[in-house]
Every structure is written in C-alpha cells, then in structure tokens.
Length: 379
Image (cartoon, rainbow, N blue to C red; front, side):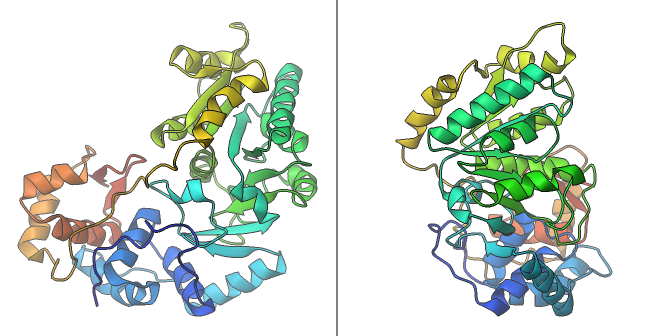
C-alpha cells in the first residue's frame, strides 16, 4: 500500500530505530538490483517500509520495462549480517542515532552504513584530507601537520585509507580520532598493506563503508567512496593532486554539497601540484597552516545546521500511478542529455507524484541514469 508524501529521512537524527527484522529488510532492499540511495529513499517514502517496497519491486520493474529484477534474499542478508558481526561491524540506518548527521543531509546518503571503531568520532566536526598516492616527502609532511593540528583542535580527520597523503593524514590523527572511508567491504581492505594502519586508527577512530561484506573494490567504487568522504566533512583539504587525480573528484563533490574546499599550493614544476594549483585559481581557500582551515571552519560551526539537500515530497502518493500514457509520455521526453525533475514535470504536464512513480519504475528497470546533481537521463 502506498504511503503519504512525508519524507521519512528529513526528520532529526535519532528519530527512528529499526528492529532487527527491519534492518534485514533495509539491507535486502539496498542490496537489490538498481536500488541506489535515491531510489531507496523514493521507495520508502512511497511504500512506508522496506518490507512493502520489496514486495512491490517486481511489479514496479515490470512496468518500467524489465522482465525481472534480482531481489536480495533474506538468507543473503542474514549471512552478511553474520559476517559483519564477526568483524565487529554494525549496520546503521539513515536517521538513526549513530548515522553521521552531515552525511545524512546529502542528496545521495547511503541508506545503511557499515561502521566499526569508536563511533563517537563520527559525531564531532569532520574535515577531510586527501591527495596523491605518489606523494612527495613535503606533501606527506604537510598532510601530517594539518591532520595533527585539526585533531588537536577537536576535529575528526576523514580520508580514504589510500597510500600517500591519505595514510599520512590517518596516522597523524590516529590518537585524536580519524575516519577511514572504505571503497570495499570491511573484510576487503585496499590497499592490503594499510590494514595495520586501520588497526592503529580504530581504537580512537572509525571505519565506514556502504559496500557489502566481501566486496572487493573496483575502479568505479572509488568515486562512490569519495562522495562519502565529501559528505561527512565540513570541508575537503587537497594536498598534492595531479590534473586528473581522484582527489579533484572529492573536491567537486564537496562543492556540490556546499562544503568548503581547501588546497595546499605546490611548485608549478611538480605535476602532483597541477590539480591543487588549479583549485586555487578556481577559488579554493589557500592553506599553508592549520589556522587557515580553522578560520573558515569555526564560523560554520556556530551556524544552524543546513537544510537537507533533498526536498520533502509534499504531495500525497496515493493514486500516483501515471498510467500507460503517462509512462509513454515521460519516456518520450527523456534522452541522453540529463534533465531535472522540474523539467520533466513541466514538459509532461503530469503531477509531480505521478512523474516520480514513473521515474522510479524506469530506474528499477535499469533504464535511467542519475548524475551526482540528481539530473536524469536514459541509459
């Protein structure tokens, strides 16, 4: 049965608490085919529970043009939960007490995050430090100085557990609290040589992942990890990033979420400084010492928390089925060029709720692509 239009995730943190069975249902839904963070959110707002959404998936995907959709089984979810417990990992749902608040407010917040370590560090203000894997001695030194200074100022340092700058930032802030964002499951640490570093940071820090247990990271998983690094943080500090560095992706994602971007300048002769120097030309805050970061971050902490990035759905969803003609109309309007939900509503003449349902069906059928800004195109 379809629920009302209230956005279940726009409530204050700790407003919900899942039962064990609800957590398994959330895990099943999040592990089913074509159910990304935005689609998960739409499904729960539409049906009111993960259990009801799971029951509706086959029909929704069929209406969107797919003959079948793989739905994660209860046995698969139970095995993953058991594997997680063996590693000391807990699954925390969007809106529960331990879910990081700034990440919750992002447009593509994971429905569930797998956490281990000292979760208190996730409730403090966080600043990310990222940069080159092939870092110079000078780059490693400045990353460590900045991380140590931020930790001493009461901040949690966030990074991606990669070689080079990431590792230097984690090591320097291990005593005060640092968060490692993983590209794979908690039992598939990458790179493997940084497992001892992870063990070092867990007593005062934490590790977080949205990926399944047993998932070995692939190239396309690192941008997903980077959006979590950006989403957790008040700002992202980039130290030594080449022109096509993944750290620049993290910086771009931070800007999309209205977070601060900082850059450490480097020699024009060093290709590892090409990306950071370009960030400075584009308006990033120049950093030579930790006070440069704190001068920007501390005033933010005195402001009220930002509004959630996703708008609350105000229209009732009962009777929102667009019908065959509505689906055909929406499909004919879409193409390879990304457009916004408002564009589709205006062009189709259909109610917002009906357009959302049609897009959800196409999404579950694997026919839609959503870019980081939430714009929609056909695959």
